[in-house]
Image (cartoon, rainbow, N blue to C red; front, side, top):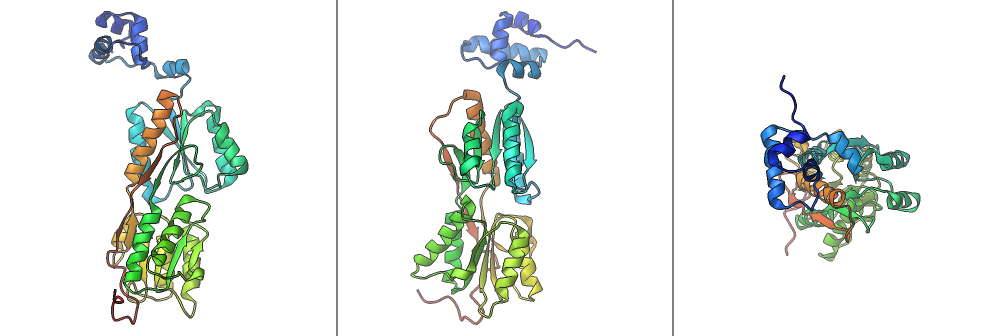
Length: 345
């Protein structure tokens, strides 16, 4: 077995000191370009692998990033996780994923654990309101973090989708088809996705001089079981909705189950719109209309912002990156039952 190359071997081949090799390996900024190039060429030629553990100890880094999510089993989050992990891996970082199930104490526990030197930064989409003790814990974190699909707190970096714009477009499409009894099911308005979707829903009605049916706006939970119960309850009303917008990436299956249980057909009896592209939208017959955004772009952007904080060790003005949404009605949206067609403009 060939003997592994050492830092001394690299220094001799590049004709520099061991200290210069060390500065190149540790990304020091005070190395002249031609010297850095010579060292990098020697490292590549010899196949030298720096001692990552020793490097981390010297720099006070673990080369690990924490990722806190409410539910890691949601299929739509796969693109976010894999892309973020790829971006981190390219810079020599690994990612530690933790599941909170939306529990406040679990989120607090993870933040405190991560702040004790276990990771160099955190990507997180908390379910806990950013207020009181939770906000104090965030402010006290000795490591940088980036919020995922959250617009609070205002003083930190965040990457989130334009749920307001997407819901505005979807609601407008349904209204233009003639629907006046549209239900919106989404999460609590204390969280960005829920609040943004309600704003888009109300704005689409207002743009046409209309008012939403208040009892048809249920902003309580993103969970699929809640979506099933809420949809089932609404469909049991004498004046039931003619369309439903599932305003959460894990809610569509609950909505569809409730519609099937009631023996209704899509879109003949009720139109349906989902949030977040997934296989269920395409495999269902008919395909379900969807407000979608690029989870890969969310992951890449969030990981890049966090790495910038970690590597440069400074906090500039908070950066807010909004990922655009698109709406594709597919075949699940049609004029309400009994209508001859969309109302005249």
